[in-house]
Length: 426
Image (cartoon, rainbow, N blue to C red; front, side, top):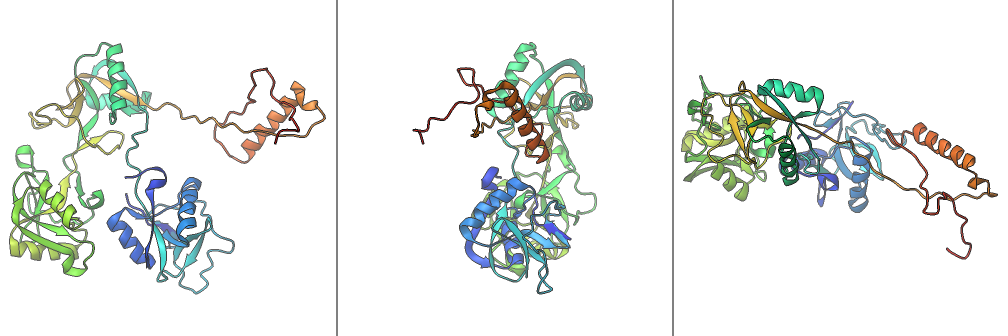
């Protein structure tokens, strides 16, 4: 089998980044992409493949995220319809276990060969997605609201862009809704992420006994102690910290900073400015090295943080517009989000409020194709035109060029479809 190399921001052509400044082996390229972007590029559909082809046209034969496992993508995605070159993969030298991309097709190669390569970044929550909002004037709990929205629409409302706010405001006004209303925000206090590449917490768990305990309801950042154990602390506390440097190897990749003391957020900014990011302990070897640093300089911030507020539809939150003093978890169990007067607040999920769903309008794209035919004049007969149109529709269907496509003639202002070409015009 072959597997792709992608984990987890950009959209469109910008999500593929050509790297030609230095030739690398496939493994070196994967490490580089995972450090500075997301991973080696994957071609999961024809659109991806076309974009990668443009990159390869500019920089030449390039590594991307396919490797023999047998063939998979490096992020674990199962590939379908791989566009192999004729006779590929052939494992000609018996160790061609990595995939490269050339002239729009895939070939298998020795992973130690040096090529340019293509990284990939995930499409962030797309600000171009147009949410259509639906206020529901029935007072229910957040959970019941979510269930209703997922059955009748898409989900509880996600609000990201200024255009979202404008459409939401219009929907609220049309229903005279002037009180709190449930939206898709919710808090998951048991969810943790690493600062580096926004990685979800891995299998390794090194919590100190009875930790994390979120004492006081505001312990959302993590420290490592001299024994190598983790515990949660308020992010605003000033502490030593440990950075990660992607340009170093071994123990040198972890950089101790004991002065000045910083909050977790300040430490993250410092590490991202002068190194790569706050340190991550993705395996036991990492944790042992971090333990040695903490043993020398005292308990220190690392890159683990509580990934609390999320959107119900999976959109990654950014720049949430909280009301002043919110979220405050006033009753210690305010784990659901509501909206009022263009701002969010946290609330007890069992409270009964009106709620707002969202849905997505169908996406349509109109394409106009000019058709030129040689004819004895019969093409001007409406019956012949209808017959040609039916044949075109069947061609589209047979070749699966478009899903749910609608094909029709474009009628000109004079009411005609075809016009005789003027031989004097080019």
